[in-house]
Amino acid sequence: MKKRRKSPKRIIKSIKVLIYSNDFMERNRTSEKYFTRKRKLPFVPLVIFMVNIIKQTIQKELTRFIKMFGDRKSNITKSAFSQSRMKLKPEAFIELNNRLIQEFYTDNSIKKWNGFRLCAIDGSKLILPTHSKELMDKFGTLSNGMIIPQAQISSCYDILNEIILDAQLETLQVNEMNQAVRHLEKLSKGDLAIFDRGYAATWFYYMLKIKELDFVNRIPKGFRKDAEDFRLSDETDNLIEVNIPPQKSRYGLQRHGFAKQELQPFKLRLVKVILETGEVEVLATTLLDKEKYPLEIFKDLYFKRWGIETNYNHLKSNIHVEEFSGLTEISIRQDFYANTFINNLQSVIALDSKEEMDKENNDREYEYKINRNLSLGFMKDRIVEILTSDNPRYYQELKDLFKMNPNPIRKGRKNPRKPQDKNRRKYFMNRKRAV
Image (cartoon, rainbow, N blue to C red; front, side, top):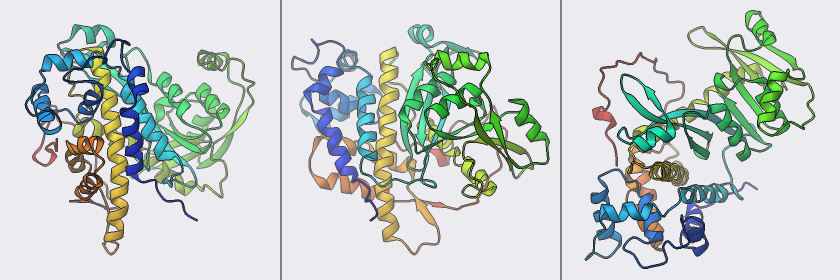
């Protein structure tokens, strides 16, 4: 019997219980003295305000929030908000996200590829507010004509279900490999990890094998001699043996707590993928069964990694994760992890809406998907209604709005990538923000 997908209403109810629990407040205040006296912006309203997609001026957002969901005769100043948020740990939003993830994957029917949950890991950079010496000193800067503070972010992303399993925001001194190692704590046997060429490392392969994780990795030229020999040969599919790693690779394992592991040689499969341009890419994978996983499936499989790039675009272009509401380290971390939670909450509601939409329109020529930018705009304020009320109509109204103006999925459609024009407009008429 096929499992039914857990209702997002149940997931949201669990999140509400967490937000309103006293233990949650005690874990996520920066001092046990905070949120004990009656204030205009106590703990629960503060958390809910910060997941309401804050993108306009803080004072305008606060006035709108209190008029809609609080005491209409009062107001909250920007200064009061700034003081209150300093009492809130950014980990509060990580905990909310972990609760959502836990509920989503418990007793739930999720999308899989050949029995695997497909998980991509990749990193990116975030541009931070430019007028904060604190941020420059903490996170580091990159110079591109002007000195700009930036942060190194990384995410582990369930491609098919569009859920960020883990997100990290670090200083520029932390490299993507170190972040990837920490992401592995969120994965387990039955997950298939997909990596780009920047993650090719023998010690990393050993770590994945020790944790019983399967993977597909695009490898760069010159990575290993046996892999380079394969690239230059006429072979398209071959097995190689990865022997006990040299001392340099063992150092990589030791740095991450695997010094005492007994290492054994293992088989690795190399396959060639030919792109439309005629360029040949080599993938390394632990999917060794050539009958179960024929050569032909790997081009489409690796292309699915593009989902994490699309999600980064959603975070930056739609959610506007780089539009921070403060200039301090704690505000940067609060905003980043709150936006990660918003991203996942949107995905959970979108999955529910799409299933309902497909049943209502099963005679359409194309399969359709929820419009991510438009549906994000519909979440504004309505998510507060859902988190502050038990009235089921608020969720149903939001789900109905999600189904408006969906985008058709035209499989096989490709657009050539064009070189960026440095003088191009940053925003376009057909890319106006929905929030």
